Length: 413
Image (tube, rainbow, N blue to C red):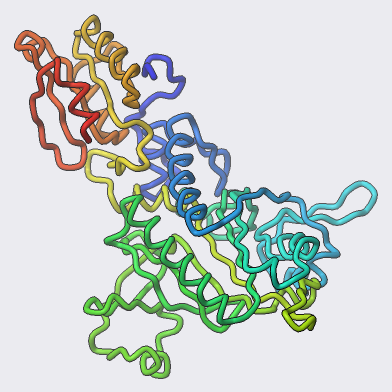
């Protein structure tokens, strides 16, 4: 893509109404646009990052046997009444509306009910289980603390996966496979060294759950980590009883602030019983399916990457989720840069080509803010020597590469 064709522009001004680093940087760099408190639009660069995060998650869900579908955002009152979750006193984040004929509808904040009802139409025998079904779906939550940029919002995409097993033992196998997939996801998007599977409260679903918490000063949670074992606990479950169960000594725990980037729950028969999700076992006896649910917010992951990996110059995207792999910067050498851009495009090297008129200083500052992993700098002196400069955004290291070896440089990586 030629940068001159982007309708977005980089801004030097920090948004006055944003306090979070992720929102400030993403707005300045032209990745997102704030529509209202807790509601953001994803612009071309931002959508490319969001889709790359989604792509990583999708690959890992498919690898463990997940089947992707998409359910509706509009939800029926009668369905949620069956699980006693329509009442605002039970679920306080509902956005609800009333049609002209008096019918009440909700905008889905989560999808246990509709997913369970759907599966009740297809699961009849023990041979139909186990199964994993997931979606990337827009959720709506009446979030009262919408103040952390794209990490805490009122409208967002959620990857929610639901597991359906015959027994609790079979569920444990599915749960472990999803847990391992989540750890791979956070490793792939650059958060692996900072993210802990954290023992936590199960909230409205179960006694306990696991959260995936990324260490960050921008976090709203407090976790306690035993760095020797890698075991982590949320502050809300920290007790002598839990420590004894997990075999952890309190004095070894280190307190850290963190951002929740994912969670996994055991649901049991909490939804299958009231919604009639039954199957017949090998003896012809009717049994309730044993369920689990597993969530990741791709937008929240994106915001967390910005919070934890950015530096004083701007965003630093890991290559796995960057909007482009290469930022081609022409310093008054558009004729040669055009040729290189065409060669990169033909070779499948994903490139943003900065071809607009600006000083070298402005181009470097904008490129650092945008955060693409490689900056390929086309300057007069290096071109005269048959070379270009390649700068790594992550660490600032610069190397010179011969023009005729440039495409190969990226193809080998």
